[in-house]
Image (tube, rainbow, N blue to C red; front, top):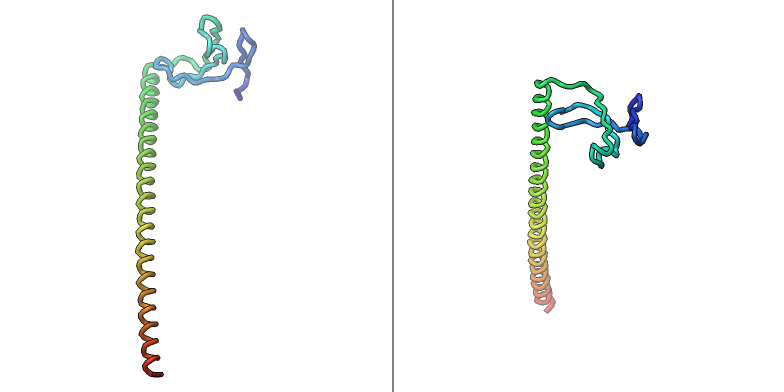
Length: 133
């Protein structure tokens, strides 16, 4: 809505926004249309005014092809982002599983270490007992 000079709808006197057409007949062509014209049938409100002149057949095809290519690339990007999200989730699950395995092995090591300390303490007690006895 930030353009000058302002274009007003002759029926409702509202400032008409500038739109860009991506129809096959007018790709990339700018126009003014009242907001009411976008929700009502053209016969009831009908305010549309072109900002740009008509384009050539070459430009229509070129812009249409470029528009279609951009849309396909956007679909490809969405698909890649979804795949990346899936892979990230799988990696996160793998990391969580790996952390759980590390914790389990660590607990086993602590248990073995405590057993070793117990045996050393027992044997030390027996040696001290034999010396004193």
